Image 1: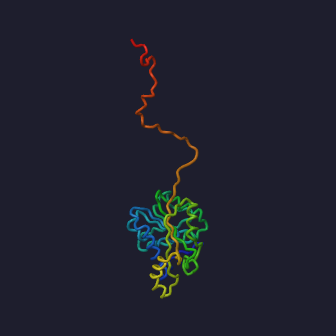
Image 2 (image 1 turned 90 degrees about the vertical axis):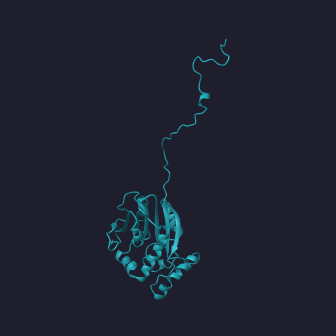
Length: 256
């Protein structure tokens, strides 16, 4: 079940907790992908809060918003780049995207298999996708005060296994949002402490959000086909095995 775009906008742009979550997740995205010079960057679900840093340098930035969620103009004060689309049929050519971000897209989709197939289709050779989902063991997936409390939360193993089944190769996993999902002043003031402590004690404390970077895995073609063997270019000793011309004499034969 997709959340309404108005609720997502209000959380990320009009609440203290939402702005803190946006800042923390965006920092992790920028650590993975510090630049996108001349590239096509797309986001699906409600990923637009994470795409703004790429607007000045990317060749193209596209915000794909699924029809059940709804769409809003983005970015504010600039030419609109957000598009309303079917969640499994995007208005993008095959192999067009260099970087793809999904946030509030995979865990809320009713057709995750078809959605991942569409992700695979639009990524170009060497393209990267970043899947951002609620972490099953984190506090944020247990609270319906934030968008991460909706949909299907994942463990790292579950998400990576699902990506592998759809021909993605997981490369990097990041856990973030260790701060409690509360807008109370005390938790907001100590948010930095919890993020640092969580990063140091990640084996003990679970982050609320799981991020997995994956590349598009393209297998070598297989199946029936004619195999052509290219002849070797080494022809140095070829003359030794050549047949004698007709009428040639062997050594000592017919000598006078």
